[in-house]
Image 1 (cartoon, chains in turn brown, red):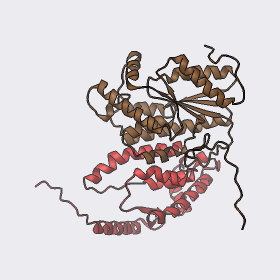
Image 2 (cartoon, one colour; image 1 turned 45 degrees about the vertical axis):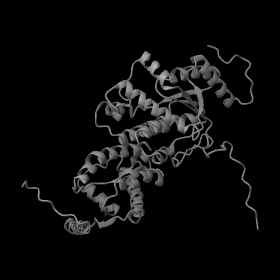
Image 3 (cartoon, rainbow over the protein chains, first blue to last red; image 1 turned 180 degrees about the horizontal axis):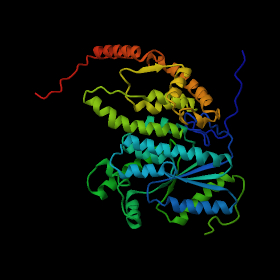
Image 4 (cartoon, rainbow over the protein chains, first blue to last red; image 1 turned 90 degrees about the vertical axis):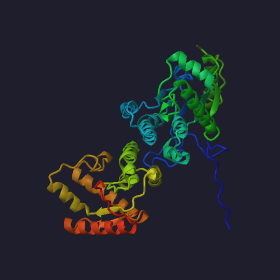
Length: 257
Length: 162
C-alpha cells in the first residue's frame, strides 16, 4: 500500500476557517483565474462616519511615497451602477432583496474591471469598505446569511481587513458634527419609527453587532477608531508595513505627517 | 458576472412586484423566460453553474415550466425571415468567439442549448417541440396546462360582482 503523498501546506492557508487571502471565498469566477497575482488587497471596513476615507487617503500617500502603486476602490463607485443605485435609492420602490443585488452588481463590476486587473498588475488595492458592509446591511435587513455568503462567494478574500470600530455614542457625535443623519444611514427604510435619531441609534447598533459577529469569521484586524486620526494611522501603517515588508526593519519614524 | 447579477437584480424586482402579488391573489402568472434562462445563458458566459443556481434560490419554483426546444438552424431561419438584425448579446458577440454575427449566434446558442438539455431533467422541464406548427404546439401547451390546473385543483373564478 502506498501512503498518500504529502502535500506541502498552502502558502497563505490560515489556521482557522480555510479562508485564503488573495483567493476567492467560495465559488470562483471560472473565467478569471487569479492565482499567483502579485498585487495585494487591503480592505478598510467600518460604519459611516468612522473616518475611513481620511485613513485611506493618508495610507495611500504613505504607500506611494514608499514606492507602491496604489489603486483605490469604494463601495457603489462602479461607473456602470452608481447612477442606477442613486436612482433606485431616490424612489420608493426599492425592495431589500433588489437592494442587495444592486450592491452585488456594483461590486462585481468593480471586481472585474478595477480590483482584479490591479492585482494582476501588482498594485496595492485599498478598498474603502468591502463585502462586509453589504453582508452587515443585508443581515440587519433579514436577508438569509448563508445565501449572502454564497452570493459573495466570487469575492476575493483580502490580504488584510481592518475594521475601524466605534461605539454608537461616538458615532452619533461624529455624524451630527459632520453632515447630519441621512435616511439610509439611519435605516429609516426599516420603519422603526419616524424619529431619525432613534432609528439611527437602533440601526447603527444592529450594524455594529453584525460587524462584530463577522470579525472572527473573516479575520478582521480590529482597530479602536475612537482614537485620534494619527494614532489610528500609525497603527495601520505598522500593520501594513509588517505585512508588505516582513523582513525589513523601518528606521524612519512611521508617521511622517 | 456583472451581466449575471444585473439580470438577477431585474428578476428580483419583477418577482417581488409582478409575480408574487398575483400569486398571492390566486392568479395564474405566465412568465416569458424565467431563472432557467439565466442558468443557461450565464453559464455559457462562464459563470459557475452552482453559484448561479444558489443566486436564484430566492425565486419561486414554477408549477409548470415549458421549454420550447428548437434546432439552431430553425431559430436562425425564423429570425432572418423576420429580417431581424441579430442582437449583440443574443448572438453572444461579447464573448468574441466570432466576428460574424451568424457564426457567433450558432456557437453561442449551441452552447446555450447544451445547457438547456442539462436542466430539462434537473428541474423537470416539459419539452415542447418548437419546430412543429404553432397550432400543434398550442394544442400540446393547452393540454399540459389543463392537466396541471386539474391536478392542482385550480378553478376559474367568476369575476362578476354579486
